[in-house]
Image (cartoon, rainbow over all chains, first blue to last red; front, side, top):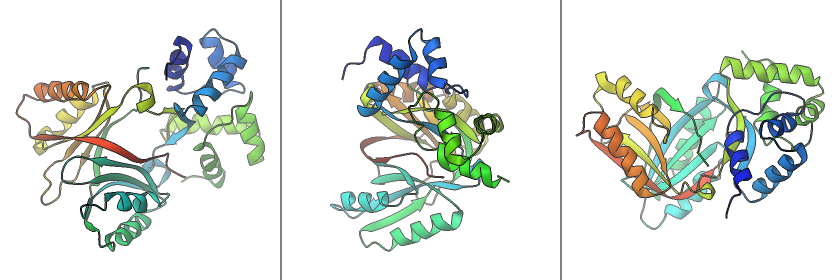
Length: 150
Length: 154
C-alpha cells in the first residue's frame, strides 16, 4: 500500500507520545497543520489497514511489578506450526517469531508474576514435540525504543 | 506500590485509546473519575518511567521494514557494558539486552536489528561488529514468520 506524504507525517508523529490533554488529536493536528477531523479520519484509516496496530500506553513490566522473560523452543521437525499455535494460545505471550538457528521459535512472556511464567514453561515442556524449551532471562536492559522512520 | 486506582487505570490504557475527540474524558468516565485526575496519573506514570510511551505501535512490515534479525553476541563480561551501549546507539537497533547464557548457548548480548532488506540488516551488523573491533562471535537470527505480536496485558 502506498502511503501519502501526510500519512507518513502522521505515523512519524504518532510514534512519539500523544499529548496528555483533553483533546490530544486537536493538539497533534495543530502540530501537523491539519484539521482535527482529518487527523482522526486518517488514523482510523491507518488503523483499519493494520498499519497502526494500536495507540496505547506501553508499560515497563518490571516497574509495574510484572514478570517477563524471553524463551526459545526446539521442536520436533514438522511440528513447529502446531507448537507455535500452542505457545500463542497463552495471553501472556506477547511476541513469537520463527527464526533461523538452532531454536525454531523465540517468544516473550509478560505475566502477573514469576510463578505464572514458570507454570506456562512447565506446561509447554510436557509437549512431546518440544525437544527443548529454555529461558534467557534479562541481566541488563540497554535499550528499548521501537520507532521506525516512515 | 501501585494504588488500586493506578492499577485500574493501567488496566484500561494499555488497550487502544478511543478515537473520539476527548478520549481521556471518555476513559475517565469509564473509570468513574475526573479527567483531570486521569491525566495527572498518566503524567506521573510517564515521569516515573512506569510508562515507556503512550504512542502508536506500527506494523513493521506494512511500513516497509520487512526484515528483522535478533543478533546474539558472545561478549566477554568486562566488555558487555561498552558493547551494549554501542549497540544501543544505533537507530536500527530497537532492543538491546544482556541475557544469561546457558550451557550450549554462550551468547550473552542480544540486539534486535530492523531493515527494509536483509542487506540493510547485515550492514548494521557489520557496522556494529566493526565498532566492536571486528572478529566478535555472533549470529544473526532472521525471523521468517511472525507467529504472534501483541501488547502485554496488564
